[in-house]
Length: 319
Image 1: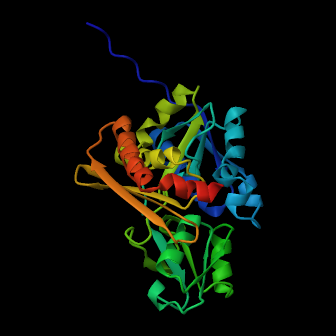
Image 2: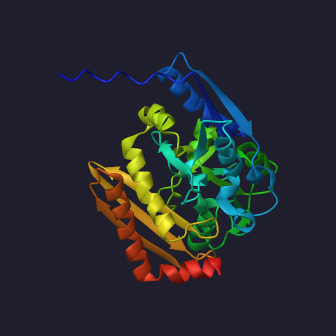
Image 3: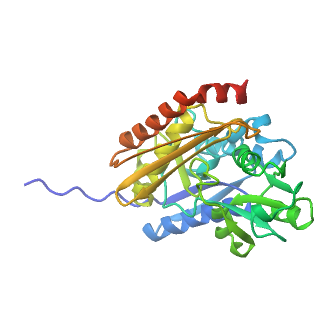
């Protein structure tokens, strides 16, 4: 009779790389607490780093390098051994990770919806003609331009607190933010309306966290495995497949959202022109139990979008 394998020893130390914004540090602390509960004898610390994306706030992301600006320095800390894992907002992660890195775990998703934040009005329909709507997202901007052409969409950068201050100072009539970030930092009362995904389809990975490691650290992957939420991970892999196949970047107003309905995963995706003049939609569903099946769902939706002319929209955005 074969003797059972001894359990792997707990790590002595773990270092979590994080951006230094208040929301990023909340997310890192959330993961730290979960790991501490699993490994109470482990010394777990957070290494805060101000990324290039956090420092360049006067230009749209699509003009200065996109989502990679928020993770490059954190990946460097993984590469040189100063950190063992990095915690990201998944919607800030590129669809294709650099060679040598992998997503090791995706915890259970928070609210994935967009939120309208406004001091005077309770809905988009109440906003006056010419009202200024602030957003850093081309996806959200295209939605507003398509659905509410009377409104004036203007760029909005900075961390969550900075954006709320800009609204309160009167620079914007309303702003659109991810509901998850507002809820995590205790700003639920600032939400005037949660936008139904039928109106504002969420970004790829919105509301979810991604825990990144070097792909040559299998022991870290093993320690992180209990944090992986299978249903969320399958949904996110389907969404990220859409972004990867269409060359998803900050230059493309792209949305993809997979939602469980009983045991079936329904994936909806859209790609739009930045001015909202043309918006393509596609959806499909399946019952995936593997990452490959979730990715196949993503490719099915991409095939439908391409049939409708998605390649032309992408070329218009990136050309």
